[in-house]
Amino acid sequence: MDAGVLQLPLAIKLDLWLTDQVILVGLFALLALSLNLINGWGRMFSLGHHGFYFLGAYGAAWLTAALPTGLPGALVFVTTCLFGMLVATAGGLLIGVPCLRLRGDYLAIATLGFGEGVRLVISNADVRVPPGFTVPRVLFEVNSSNLLMYRLLFLGIVILLVVGVVLLIRNYVRSSAGRAMLAVAQDERAAGLLGINPTGSKVLVFLMGSAIAGLAGAVYAHYSGSVAPKDFEFVLMVTIFLIVVLGGLGSISGCILAAFLLRATERGLGMVGGVVSEWWQVEFALILILLMIFRPNGIFGPRELTDVIRDWRQRRRAGSKA
Image 1 (cartoon, rainbow, N blue to C red):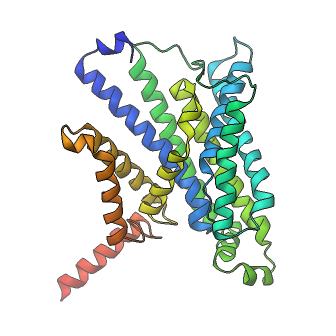
Image 2 (image 1 turned 180 degrees about the vertical axis):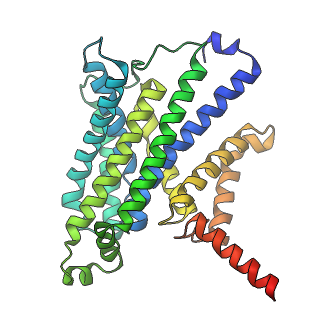
């Protein structure tokens, strides 16, 4: 944080902190929704999602540096985000076609190796995006006076992306291709007998998930202004997977709520003083263990928030009639 930001009033610094946290929650929600599409509805066990996030961020950063100066900032932003999605989708195709015939733990190991391998290869390769590369601010120059406006702009972008991805996933699951995906997830052999191509259905879902993760990575690169390999280590994959599991496999609203709860709990334990702050990681792990004991299917399970509210109203009406 620069000296100009430190001299800002407390209320503005609080607004900056809150917008930053909500933006990060939105990015985690995008990653969790895309992983839930693969692990939840598709019933594939992938542990390499941080690799697609990495490819999207570095692809956008590389193209931003490679494009000539003087282009409209909005055009550069959109173009580089689309390029980040394309790079992540290419990575999903690279790992999806040969590995999606695997199942269970074998698929998890293959995707985990891909995620870590991509990060290590690009980090040690001679590319134009070295570790710690600074991404130019293409939308407008950022300083202490307009930093809040900059974060509010990205907050709006992230919210629009989350809404768009939610609509995309919901409509896809309800479409004929989504029904085919659900059939393959339930029983691959029976789906094949019905004329469904199991491999094609799984590859399509994998590509959609990797593209959304790449988009989240591209937006993160522009928002943070820098990318480094340490931002995409396996602990990030663990966090994304926890959000999916805690929210509920196959639940859109569960992913979003779990992203908020996970981030709030993590930051809250870290900010409390004394012993709580020093041992927040242990306490955080204990909270997760207790939640998995008492809610093994996640907060909502495979249901949505609207389903939970409707069931609660029905039970309330039944109780009042009794």
